[in-house]
Image: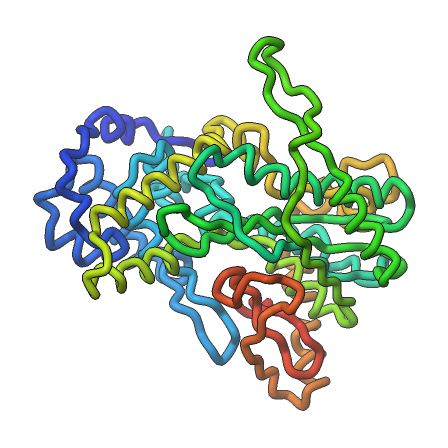
Length: 422
């Protein structure tokens, strides 16, 4: 486990309060922040130096700008890092230190922030773990890619938790019930949150992507899933009892959008497994807000205040990453979860690779060879081209940039990123 080196504690203690001058800057542009470094406090200057060092020393890890030829998306790490370092988010130091080598007890250790909502590198590490778990299991199940979304956005302003969480809980509860009833054999899902813009009401769209193991997912299964989601009744906090109690008013009120497509090749399954892990996109809506500021439609101060309000709401909703555990649990909320045959902790048959086997170097090398073989087979099937084109998933009501849905191979519909990028 990466160890948080003690010399960095002085930077946490050195942080001074923001005097508000930085609110007039473009937080997504690191060059602009360096030009106006006199407006930054000590902690912000230190984080800016750390980010620039990572972009220079580790470009393949933190400075990928995307490749249209392979369908690789621009991870926009520099823009996201600028937004976070100029915020009041409590985990901004952990985010900026992610991937940095430090000396600890006479040896070098690499610190990882383990934040699976914003950090592209930690999402990539989780992606590799999922591939180690499921890349060899294509013949053991019948796979599908399920997307459950909504046709309208929600406001993130007040109060964020009570508005957004039921729309995730309704879907995850319905999927667990379908596994228990035998409609599905197993499900592995990832909760997603798309921010449409930094407008006053801050519209967001909670949705979910899942890898499904089922004999079939047809019209009957879709109807059952819709009924279970619509019949979901949540819970609310009782201040007198100091506990959650059932509340019939907590329910899903937005129209559903469900799409499920079968995965017919190993490459399809590998790419969907890899696609489940992607960070929340803050840079795209912020850059759209920058364009509005340049046109004089709003001020940078207003835009940056909206960005800080969003990060504060996310921290209130999910909490801060626990520094003592390698986990994606944020204040009790688990972004990635599984049930049935895809849950390694289940008492039922698990069709993936157990942890004791997959956490070995030999298995990691075998996974790389397996992914490479699947990629070669796919290239042979399409005549050795392996070309890809951008296409949005019609089952998700958000736009292509909203969900950052992966491109689709013209022959098989397989999603990117490719195994070669791993």
